[in-house]
Length: 405
Image 1 (cartoon, rainbow, N blue to C red):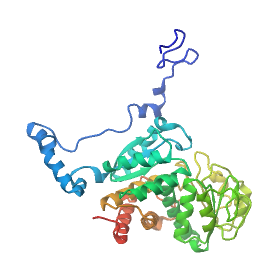
Image 2: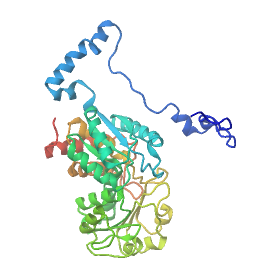
Image 3: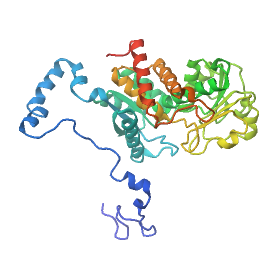
């Protein structure tokens, strides 16, 4: 149906909205045309090159792969490429903005894969949000990739989607919002533990937030042997027997909060050794003051930490945030490039809990003798990071028997 005469065409600004010069903003200028491209790895200079790269030469390779399917890893890019997949339902701090608006972030993720891990990846933004549709779509795409990085999918759907894909596929499936955050947080906490002289096994931690990252951080801390850990959501502390818990939180309740604390995050912080904020909420200064001596505060919500780091430092020995303008940034880019590089290098069929723990230990060890209150985690630009994580993940994959090489 044609537009009415008094209506502006879809590609024109509305009469009451002046046209905006987006490229005056350096962020828009940088993103113009996208941040990625595909380049060939072999020359096509003449007829002989063309006949090898494409027909008829390519047919011999296709036939060989049809006879021996594993050859696809040797004679195509499949084993070296990751799909970065989202449905746009939980993009950064922007929420459910949809697949098109999520593309700049997915392109950025692919950029980070390449720059920090030497890993090629393809951003894929899916126009579906039903868990069955997402799982089926990714399974159908999987033959083209050596790994799947799930990104910015809202909780609790993200847990089910990852679990189902891990069960269905024989390539690594990794939800970075969960496990990338968890690996880096554990690495930072290991070094904070070393700095304060408190072993993990003696620490009591409080995690604010029971979404994707909150659950994953809690799980990896349990695997690492944390003494006790209490988790809170928007309704307060999670404990066994609390009404209204979804299955994910119900399982969490059975594995955490051995002290059966009830009430609010602030209540649980009294005497606690560690606070990890992943909720987007806030905590008061007096709550940090009420924590144990040599307290550790990871206020990781972006762009606004749960408490300003300068305020937290008045009472805590170690403070970290998710921001690059403060010391001790807990940044996923420290983990996922090396994790995937290590898994792809040995053609692992999955990423195990042991591989994540190995990644965290390797990342913590990069700090070494440079350890200080304002340096418990290395910079993303530290060239030692990706190789250390890569080697640790690859070695652990071989040790656990999940490596094919």
